[in-house]
Amino acid sequence: MNESVEYFKNNHYIKITNFITAEEASFLYDYVKLSAVRLAHLENSQTELSERDMSEYGTFTDGQVNGVFSKYGDLVFDTLLARKLPVVESMVGLKLITNYSYNRLYTTGCQLVRHKDRPSCEISTTLFLGHDISNLDDVNYSWPMFLGPSTGKEGTPGLPIYMQPGDMIIYEGNHLEHWREPFKGLNHAQVFLHYNEDGGKFNIINDGRPVLGLPGRYKTFTSKTLEV
Image (cartoon, rainbow, N blue to C red; front, side, top):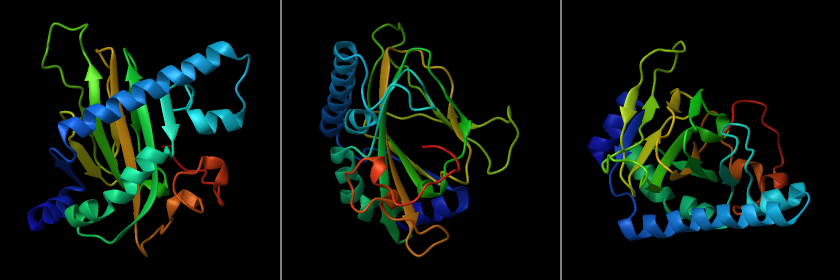
């Protein structure tokens, strides 16, 4: 663990292989896919979903990667956020507090624009759950996340980080730029688990919600800084 803490301190990120088991990743991948199918059914069977509906079932218009399924503060993933808190703390050598989870099912051609995160994502993680690349000849295709410097211009080369289901990257989300280039497969599921340093610069707990598992409408503050 001391090696991981030192690496994170020097590089502002660390990749953890097998953060969860392959079986756990597969279950959660299916969970995200079913959540997307459920929302698509609701949208096709109703003229309009209310804001309350979208906070319960997710959205296809999250503002950062429009057209793909995503969900803020899912109860299952907020539970994972809390359960993995001690492990993440041990990896980065910091006392942390939970903020929120956010899961997304990317689809063919989508990309994640280069950005930094808002204060509630001081210590961010992205966990790879699974993908469908059956449309590709390359059975070993892996979709990297790129990490860039804390200050850099558009086009500055980034470091590609490749993962397998169950692997996770822990990174300083509001310090390092990060992005993904267009996806070539059919779908790809990630969940982000976000933390703050306990007593640190931001010290936001549960992203302003009274407890984990609640939709964003229960926040007691509004952050106008960067997204997800």
